[in-house]
Length: 341
Image (cartoon, rainbow, N blue to C red; front, side, top):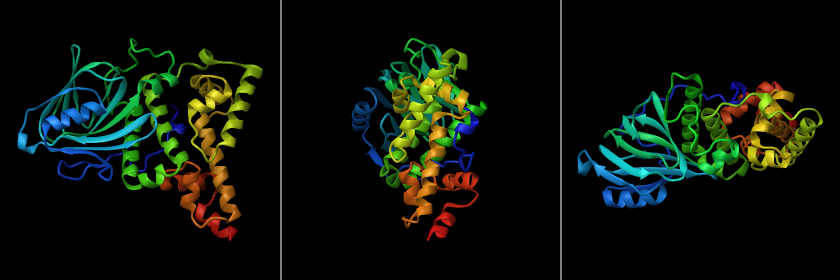
């Protein structure tokens, strides 16, 4: 993913998370329990069957699990409250990205052992045998992503293949650092505005599409344009069909898979064609088109709220939206609305 295609976080450094402070997404509690058997059973149904061993003070066990579920991605925040070992054996049919907020964790898979903290994230692959040990102060953001959603974007990626990084990677990698910061920024905004976002399908879809597109780019960088080229008239037909679909659905959920399906190509090919002819990704093109639609709506002066118009066209971060609007039109959205009245 090119830097211009990735939304810029307002704060690229996540604020230190303290063990005793409330978890992000506390307004969306999914599980609260201090009973190890209850936790094991209920979390086993959510993720995959597993064994939970309390290694620290049993009386300190207080599991807090928060969740916001989208279509192909679920965003969780989890804390156990005491030192535990989790043994899921062979995990379920989904990817799990683990982003530590505090504390430490050790992962064992096969012959590998990985230490996680605020500088190292992990990606657990579908069906991979995994043993996890969390420190008492450990808290994590967990992104659960269906294997099917990943394979729609990376059709050549089979369960038996090992992507460019298989288990863990560091913030020292600039691409990882940018994605990690954006994922944390997204969770902060979900914490404050999820009810607004989820009430607007376009906004929720834009949020999920960012996570999926950036995640698959981390798994396997885009291949060269030549590998996916169409060329000539075929390129133009693909572009025309994609643009037609985008402009007809500006106020609806716009997913890369759906745009590519309408254009009769796979998502990777569509990315390549847009980069070659428009110098942007399909979703960046769609963002510019949505911004034009917002601008037109504000110029008509038929609304009382810039926020409602922005959300209806898929913009779910008001600060970033205002900056992008000013960059594109040379004024703030509220100025446009005031002028129209």
